[in-house]
Image 1 (cartoon, rainbow, N blue to C red):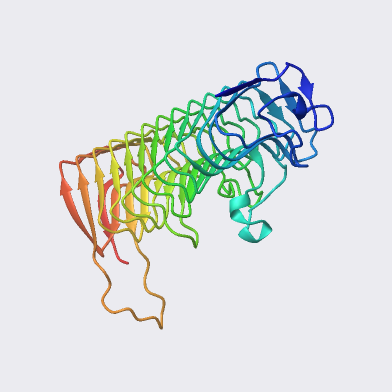
Image 2 (cartoon, helix red, strand yellow; image 1 turned 45 degrees about the vertical axis):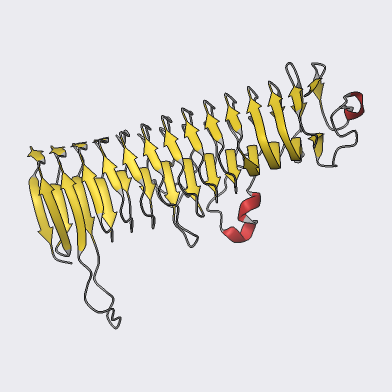
Length: 385
């Protein structure tokens, strides 16, 4: 291993001299202050502040190497604070990569504005990174706090990623990762169209074929969505475990997943939001042992779902506890017989719903067992499609 201890000071592009430190690229790329492309490097930035002065670029640029550790520095005022690409066995620990790009007054972000994989700036950005660890960093007040793109087998643990303008922790085309015990609160952006239009901002967002990830123990309160699997027109993100997270106080959805399959939502908290769980077009999805209280609309809302299991949840004082529905086929469209939508709704406690405990349209076939319905305006309603 090569150990590099940078002399504590505040540095900019014009004041940092890479040539003084063996193991760093002596003439870094024009957009970077520090460039690392050496295997087996430990870079200790204790007492160091890298200041991009709001001029864009990258504070620390790591690429095409392995077995690298970046620790303890403060990186502010860049487009991306720390950017890693094509790296394995990377550790980023104890760094502050806050107050990088976080543009104000940004509405929706269509894909045409920039290639999706390049993102829009933020704290820590990893692309094609494997078998790595990002832990105990602060990435507050960035556009995206931590981004994983085409990255696998990476642990994101114990980071503070709050007050981000877009997403606290973002996974795009990234599978088999663990996102554990992070704080990503108040990650929100309003468009001004209406009060709950938060432009797909979220505490944690997965999209583009992000499969088999483990998302546990994260605090995501007061964000646009607490947790969001975005379907859009890209590959769905399937077979993820979302457990023990708190997505409460969302003006939109505490937990949202669209056009996805095989995801498990277990033991989460989804209180005081617009919707607790919005799972449109989800299939083979499990919603189990969650707490969902005092949401403005539905505790669990699923449009055009199929083969889902809703089990052992506590739903209290929502407008509807569980609402499942589909809409008629538009006139002139033919698709044969309407599919039957099968659900298991088992051992839930649904109380004090302002409208209905369980509301479904008539094309749903339900297995109902052991549900406790109490104090609802109406306990159970079947409605025409």
